[in-house]
Amino acid sequence: MITRKAMFAGSWYPASARECEGEIKSFLSDARFRIAPDRGYMAGILPHAGWYFSGSLACNVVAGLRAPEGQQPPDVIVIFGMHLHPRSTPCIMTEGSWETPFGDMSIESDLAGMLTKKFPFTIETPNRFNPENTIELQVPFVKYFFPKSRLLPIGAPPSDTSLEIGKKVAAISRQMNLNIKVLGSTDLTHYGSNYGFTPAGKGPKALAWAKDNNDRNMIDLMMSMDPKSVIREGLTSLNACCAGAAAAAIEASKALGASTSRLVGYSSSHDKSPGESFVGYAGILFH
Image 1 (cartoon, rainbow, N blue to C red):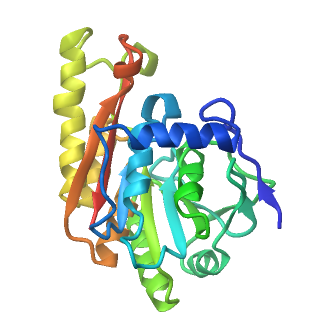
Image 2 (image 1 turned 180 degrees about the vertical axis):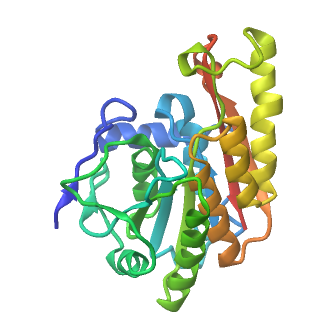
Image 3 (image 1 turned 90 degrees about the vertical axis):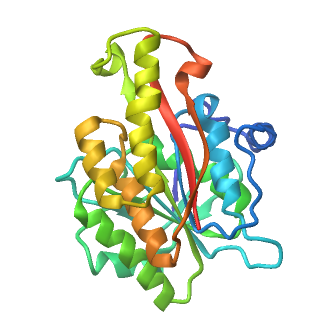
């Protein structure tokens, strides 16, 4: 089996299993985001900055998807991500495996193949792909908590097509008797001169606006499970860099039967590295 190489190991997250496990154990002890996997959560939204900045929040979202005691782990973890535009073609990986410090994670080829019959995709392969962080930063967490599950990575543009893909992921999985869990990978407001976005000026008032206004609006929409509004808000207010991924995950979770949400937590790169430019992060679970 041909393996897609991890491109961010050793920079955005540790390269060795020992170092990754040490980080994960530290993240799980973070009282801000700790959550018991006892509610049968079906899906989640999580951030994708380097582990130093958002790893604790992302890790606890993935950990929250673990099956309650006595239930079988999922067959497949679907991760929606990628920085795409509304007119972008969705992306998918249909074969091979993805390298992680904990071992390679096999791609769910059967479900991927069914989806490519329904939608036009740009097909990525282990040898031909766009190196990007939104999905890769989550794969080591997924492999650690779900070592026997398969992976289905999908690039979801902020468009209605991604909502249809989310629905089909759930429907086809049910037809195939696959137990799946779904993740949507997005960061929130990218604020400051580094990102060319300063509608509230600088200083404490800017940080408060990004957190309490712009990010809060997006979090409320995601928690209300309104995927169309998530896409619209992300495009107009620039408060979700991968609104399509979040919306697709919400649509899939609803199709799987989820009806309520839980906020795992909120943080910002400003917490770790105070400055005039910063990024917001949210973790949410659906059941």
